[in-house]
Structure formats: C-alpha cells, structure tokens
Length: 192
Image (cartoon, rainbow, N blue to C red; front, side):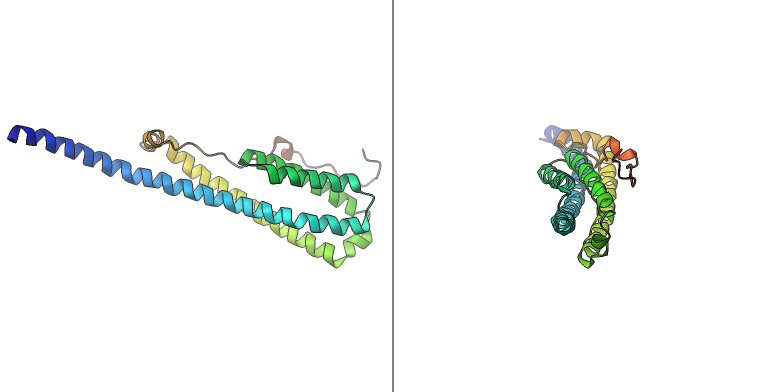
C-alpha cells in the first residue's frame, strides 16, 4: 500500500501544478475573448447608428437635390454592403465604401446653399459627425483589446493553453488601403 501511495501523491501534485497554471490562464482567455466580443459589439453599435442616420440624411438631400440620384444610389448601395458584412475585415471595407459615398454627398451639398442652411440637414450632419467620432473611438478600443488578447495567445505559457483549448488570434478592424489617400474634392464642377 505504501508503495502505491508515493506515485499517487506525485501524480496528484503534478495534476495540481498543471491546474494552478492552466485554470487562471484559461480563464484569462475566456475573459479576453469576451472583452474582444464586447468591443466588437460596440463597433457594430456605432455602425448601426450611422446606418440609421443615413436614410434621414439622404431623404433630406433628396428634397433639395432630387437629380443627384447617382450619389444617393451609391450611398444606398454602400449602406447595404455594410449591413451584409459579417467579419471585421468585411465591415472595414464596406465602411470605407460608405465613407467615400458620404464624402461625395458632402461635395454635392456644396452646390445647394438652401440645403446647407436647412436645420434638419444641419442637425443630421451634426449627429453623423458625432457618430463618426464615436465609431473612431470604438474601433480604436476594439483594436487595443484585440492587441492585448493576441499578445496572450502568442506568449508563453498562454500560447500552450491557447492551442490546447482552441483560442485563436482575433482580426483587427483595419482600414482599406485606399483610405490612406486623401479624397480629391473638385469645386470646379468639371468632374475631373
């Protein structure tokens, strides 16, 4: 009996050591993954707010500039692509398309002084600007949390625990490569 007690104690001690190392690390990954999911939900929340504001903005512009159908159609198409995006990468690309379409709308608005003076339009633009700011903060917060999480996945002993339990790196919310270039605004009206 005493011969069996020694190996059993050693096995129990080894299991206890692994439990002391693995359980906190595993729980850290669970917490980190939930933080990433929460931050991503905040990005989606701001994207939804933006998408909710855009139809009101477009309808206000339509009342003043009904012949600008191409620009308004581009906004609707970009908005639809953003609504259908499911991953951070797809949402980033669709978001960049929508931002470009909104930039073109702002150029169109310059041709309509009555529209710029309209209180509803100004209020919607202020709300959209505030939403853009909140969206920027939410994306930055998301990327910061993803960075912390991905560091845990890559570092020891976290990398071992991550591989055992299937915790993978998360995607960053990246801007499209075209976003590095400033948009070209032409007030001459020749379209080039």
